[in-house]
Image (tube, rainbow, N blue to C red; front, side):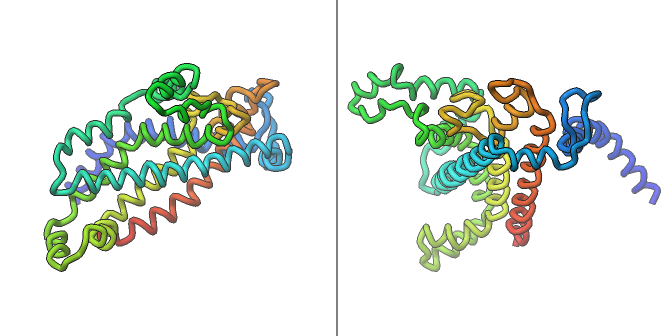
Length: 303
């Protein structure tokens, strides 16, 4: 018993620094943000308790609510594009990279993963230049692709999908590598048995591979959801914090930045309480989606 106590004490010595850092930079700001959503005012000395007043303003004030629901809808569209394109292609690439007949897989893995090493601001700026018809229009015309000479980022119908696709291009390497690792952990005996039974490649994937990597699919889905509902940098790099053009690329992350940190144009005075209210709603939305998803995908994952 004494030995177990000493072992636990030795582990706590190593855990305490990490616990302290997590509490200081993660747990405390989260709890303080929840508290701040119940107050008005930016200076601590001038803050006053308003209860649910910030939430009432968020949904009751027409000028604010229209911006919130617009950003909320755009964020869901942004997330769905990532789920379909980024994760869909990620699992397709993973299946191809783990095929026995695949040649040069290490080269292709490197090509797919390289964009994730780029800074988001650099990626956004380069794609913004390439998509600008003033810079790249003549080049597309010269190679016989004149339809690409179009102000993609200036059209309210195409701006959000284009920004989302650029984000998918940059981060596709991460789910691809996670799917590759999961597929490589599948027992070779199971795959051989399915082949002997005459199962096609599609049948093997749907009935053997996909169920066995279900926990990884759930984790990737959760990470995609959380990351996209916190997205900010790619929109900032390719458009601006106002979600141009005409708020068509405005996400919850940019909305929170404008109201809670920078201040909404044209006044430019931040509203910490309203920003905290936006963050609080996002936090509970993440919990509402993440917890059931993890429970449903992780249960029986190893069976």
